[in-house]
Structure formats: structure tokens, C-alpha cells
Image 1 (tube, rainbow, N blue to C red):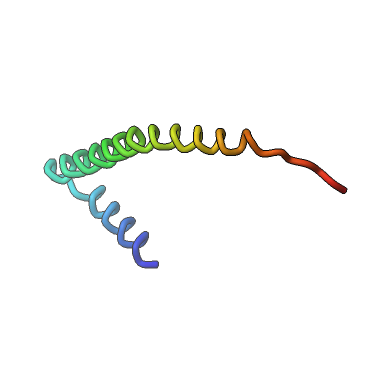
Image 2: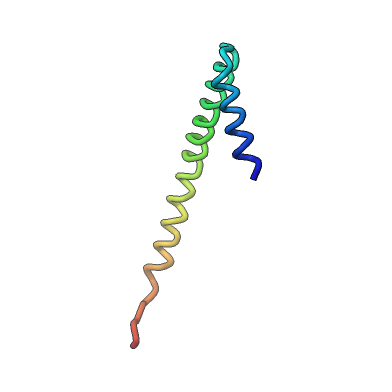
Length: 68
């Protein structure tokens, strides 16, 4: 599991740097991640509503009995 170690190492390096361009890059990266998350949530939300409606319609016609 070297992935988390590399992230922490880069984060430590970033904190020790005093270069303004490095900060701007991190802001752009963070904004991109937030934007992608918002876009994917919006696009997936409609599909989830349709799928849950289909599941509800399918399940509503079923009869459940408990025998014991």
C-alpha cells in the first residue's frame, strides 16, 4: 500500500513549500474534484429515481407470506 504514503509525502512537501503557484494548483485540483462530484451526483440522481420507481412497481405486485 504505497499509494497513501505517497499522498502524505506530497502533502508534507506541499506544506513546506512557500510557492504561490503550488497553492493555486491545489485549489484548481480541489475545485475539479468538487465539480466532478457534483456533476456525477446530478447525472446519477435521475437514474436512481427511475430505477427505484421500477423496483417499487415490480415489488408492489408481489405477495409475501410468512409460514412458520
